[in-house]
Image 1 (cartoon, rainbow, N blue to C red):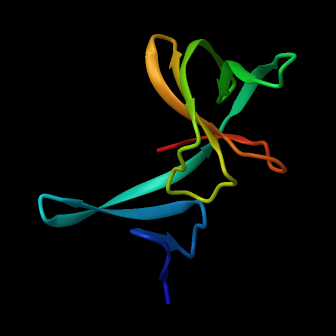
Image 2 (image 1 turned 135 degrees about the vertical axis):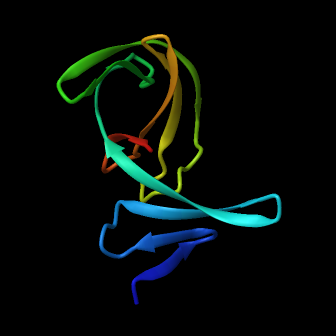
Length: 112
């Protein structure tokens, strides 16, 4: 069996556990969207209250400045993750969404 349901509207591809097919209804018809978890490195600041703020995103050896964090929320993307925090950020003049897994993983990632 190649594909198995893992949660509502999400099907996992057993050959690559980081890639999911998301079935979204559009105008009465469903279409497939491949969602992939992309690991990234983030230079972060932890203040005296324990709040985490991303300062730089490092991808493929390039450093991109996070100009500001627009919002933080507990929205979950349709990939395998551990209760992540979603950060809507302005990175080099463009809005980007990055996620940080909760303890014990604490890994940063994005989705494509």
